[in-house]
Length: 202
Image (cartoon, rainbow, N blue to C red; front, top):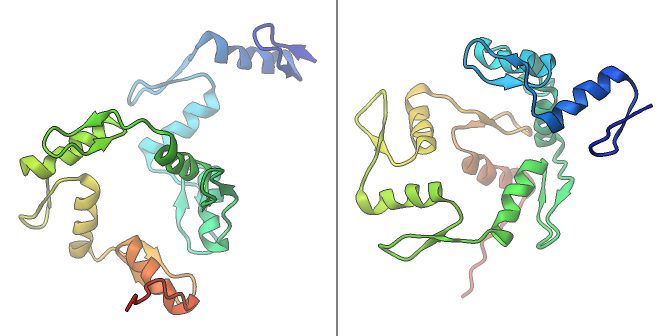
């Protein structure tokens, strides 16, 4: 075996060692001729190029949705299996993918160092603060391409535009009914699960 002198990792071949060393040297010899982004391996560049070509070679055999990477498809399949293998050690909440867990854990660990001077609400990132401040300024930079409605956030605009396009990306795997918004699918699923989360306190 071949051992990395920087970190002690063992590699099976000289070629593998040379590729691994780029982690330490920062060498990225493979450059995208579309956007200039560079990569340490040719396989990573090839995968990246699919963003520009629109190619999505991995299809879900449950719903037909297409994905750029095999790992993205694997994460998506948990929507159908309801598998949630990643649990928060602080509150026990479970997630289907590691990225969602990491995002969630920031609720517990992040320092809320950005404060709005209008209402003194605090945020973990400058971007979150900037989005919040639009509530006070009334700024709505995103305009619907179908009507005159404007939105504070791009995500809100995309949700709104589904009214015009008829797009309903969230599908119930029990009965096939589709919804434009994820929260509408979540509410619908209670028809199948029998869940009744709202209790009258009177």
